[in-house]
Image 1 (cartoon, helix red, strand yellow):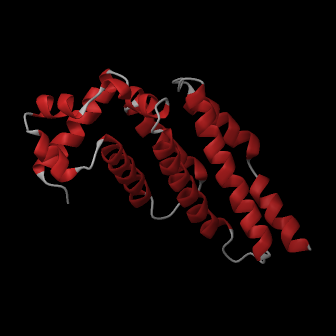
Image 2 (cartoon, helix red, strand yellow):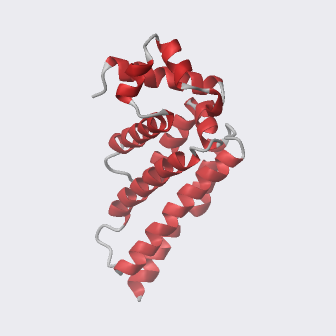
Length: 185
């Protein structure tokens, strides 16, 4: 569990990141806003990219922990989208920075978890070849990742839930058809 100083650094960094782009935030800005010295920052974090990575990893883990089982992909995708909307400017600042890879790793981790957890539910009791199972899961993992990246490239418009709901409606039954085809072979 993080200590008070570590939590203060993270909170201050997120506040600053919601106010300005990442390339305009320095360790000096964080420690001055936080009321600590530079050594305290460096005791907890190697640098700002390490701070970003820890925050992003913690958020991915929080989402994963919140959903130990998943009946639909929609549940977790909506949770991830909600977090992103709450921290919209900060997320966009990270996404449009040189630290974009950190965000993409987080996104892949969440997409992988969501799809694999959903897969345990949807494949339960089904006689699907392992190769087909892996193909189907990878397809959905890529779809989840692509949808979020596309949404971010569009500037994270707020009507995302409406569009996602419509997409879920349009794709209803798709995975069941894939499973059925695999079982028939």
